[in-house]
Image 1 (cartoon, rainbow, N blue to C red):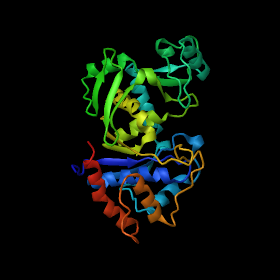
Image 2: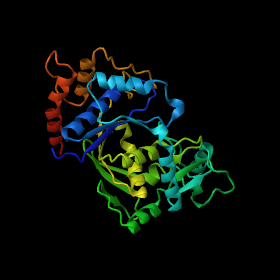
Image 3: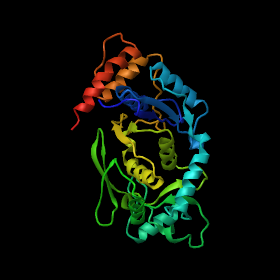
Image 4: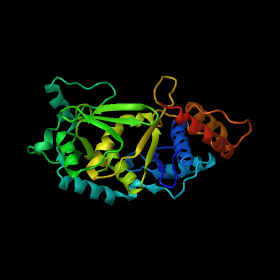
Length: 321
């Protein structure tokens, strides 16, 4: 595979609890991809959503990764210490007219969409209709949002920004974003219609995931993002935000999800058990099976398993169309 010192990958867990089987799949794939490319593998603790974070969870995650042989090439950084970077980014977007304050509550959004005959779909948030793009209409600001309408794309064209990870922006209204995932293949999303102008700074004063992850990937020089498929539909928002900030767009690879007995994504919120660091080889083998990798030789420990999976990972990606 092509690679070398230019490759920078990362694993970015939220410290809302210890790693479980699903998060280990993403960690393993991210580590393998970085090592297969001869690149750098970083760990970033995404603790920007402080009310959901659990004290000591970051240290538990670090110990779990180490037990599994997944060792980063630099000390982890924490988003909670990087708020000044997010503020600088938001100020730039506001100055460029690409972000704006919003005074809408959830009820306001529901009422505006109901007037259009649009109701909430199960498990999905209503797209924001752009109510405050033209002003707050007498309401106090609650959150700050990125514009996703055609004016954003016009800004990119005027700035002459290259878009290497975007196959095309289609349709006359410039709203349909197409890109290619390294494992999942071609993807398309009409961001304005399906998501709307999305939040950068939340009503509770916390930085939104979308802004924090894009700024940190840019500052850390991340070239490749390998993560779970539950974040696949976040990618177009992050691409738009990268373009708005003039940041390079990484390549993306989204791994299969681990499902529970009900067919739902395994998660900390639904009580997924922590991986057993007393049996790290067994935990790694289970994660490898989800990725379509071989079991490895009986009795192999984490380091031997990881070394054996590197060529298998390379073959797996080379087999993709």
